[in-house]
Image (cartoon, helix red, strand yellow):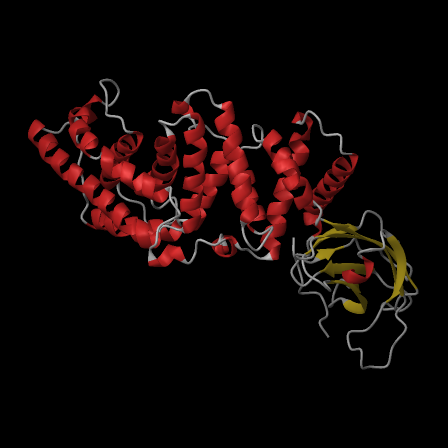
Length: 470
């Protein structure tokens, strides 16, 4: 990581010689926060100038240099605004290399230009835990750790976290391409039937689909939405299943129109490839094509189609609102028509026709499907190549420009980092030969920080109206 990355743990232990706010005593409590965090509140310690707090530990994400943690002390009043007693501002940079520190810090006023008033001291323990070593473990030995866990860690959240984490690990995006290649290689190696390759849930499919849907959102919107919206606005209802109560004449007429809309989608996809399909999707399709060809030379193009159509294009056609492509869901009639379109396109991609059985009524499209096999081969071969010379992608075929759309702010990056650490910690028992004690200790300690951070949610300050802002 190029950015400072870690968590700071602060325990508020007590204070001494604090201000008198209630005749002879005070009822002190503390508020603690960073500029980007929620504000947390300690317990109120009643009738004392030397409070002692128990179980007041707070964990904060540290995502930038010179990040400040602020602690403000107040005196609680039942019938008026709480009185300000003092504050401290802690620059975490000063403690990053010092391990755990137990320190007393003088409380200050809000206005540093005013003559200093003795407000007492606050007692805290502080320790900073760096997260910058995590990439070293994740990329070690060709991502060996993640590959070993790839059968257990197949959630959407983990796949999405891997996508964002590796795309932000380096400026070039190379690490994300490498993890995609390694995950795909393992799945191909462990699959004995080309027909089921990339068809089941796996970490490789989760990561790749996350990339396609995120990077390719704009592509889907430009290439497919005009046609989808036209069908919605015109309430296109093209049922071709006789069991749905339509006449044979209607089935025949609807089939002609359905073939037309299938052809329209194919034309829209073909026309959009040169200028709109992101280079990152092409590069991943190229990787899949080349890796599958080594083991299953007759199924490489079908495998590319399994990602591009089955998991990327077709979901956008039959459920565009679920991907955020449109704001209002199609009505049931249009949804049915879009679903039929996606079924036909998927069979063309798979290079198979409909057989007798569950959806025998679609076998009437077999001639149309067969006539489009070559079109789809051309489409899938084109998206599996990064060697085109079109104006948009020619200059972008450069590692320095990959995955720019996946760059996120440090707060989100920490969130996805937490997901990775939590997932690894919960599944670590599945690893056979983890004998790296430093790794075990670091992952466990950081996981405990994440758990502590979740528990402190109960201490979030809800009511601010009684705090004296003066």
